[in-house]
Image 1 (cartoon, rainbow, N blue to C red):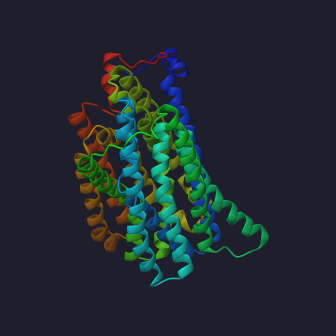
Image 2 (cartoon, helix red, strand yellow):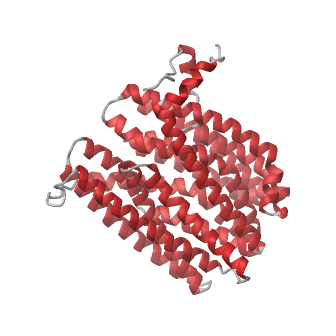
Image 3 (cartoon, rainbow, N blue to C red):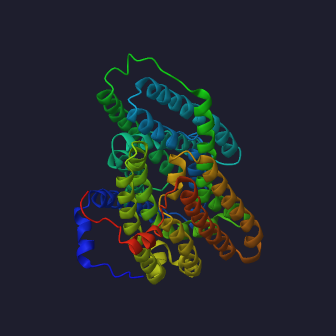
Length: 450
């Protein structure tokens, strides 16, 4: 098998529409990742190790619960927009939007209130209120951003979501440092909650204009509901989304509980660095959820194949480059956060292997959810989350943070393999970088402009 692809074929990437769009999504994701890492770096340097650990645990808990509070509406409304707009069914689309709005509001109430009373019982009430406001506002923003991504574009859906929410607390921390004012943790959460509210309102205004442009009569149209189907679908998406969020956030909370907030803060830093591969995963996710449903439900399979080939090529380049940067410069990256975290380089290196595997799986998870295989996705994610949790409780008491990283890496590699296999078997689509092997054998990777 020959892997030496002529340079002129790769030069064709510049004229490939899918690649250009993917590059834009990747550039956005790079900016988001840099902003998030800058926020974590500022917090790690400006707060004490204990306070930063507490911030890490609270941020992770609020992040996890904000996803749970969406009640699965992130993917539901994205899929509904593509499905019903392609069928020109404005009555059912209006019903789906109403369903999403009500489910989202109920979700933040059912999750936000218990979180406030639980946290306020043992901590400062002001901090509890600020964290709860962030949870509620960010949860609503997550749903509006997914809808905006599918209906308008990634720069409105994601650029207006993640960049302002990270930049606002950064400005507060830097401003407090320059003015010599104390940095209050509750103000960090308040700034994120305020910016989440503003960006959500902007997205809702743009979405209203977008929907009315395509469906001028939707305001007068009756709403058609399919509550049984939508509730079942949302429940599966809710559980799978919650488990996916647990993969991202729960480990910091568990480590803080089993060890200490200080160690949780150190683990939080290593995960943020290793999750730089989320640039690839996030860009792929943004791009696939924006374009995949339209191509799939309109049966444009040739264009879909071309899109996935381009995604796989770029993802492979990112994974290789990311491994070189993190493994080669990990010591200096940790030093940039805080010199106390340099001894955790071994944990960072091991964790990076796991996050690289997840990135290499590409949009396999999105493929399952967007093609009606939410149940299989749920089973895979649930099984790997359980594997990870069991590994934590067994390995952390014995090996500390090294045990936590080992459990995480094993679960990530397992998750990547299972998602790729399920997408191939059930949807007939290989979304991972391994699709390039088959395509290269056949010489079928289209790099010319579509």
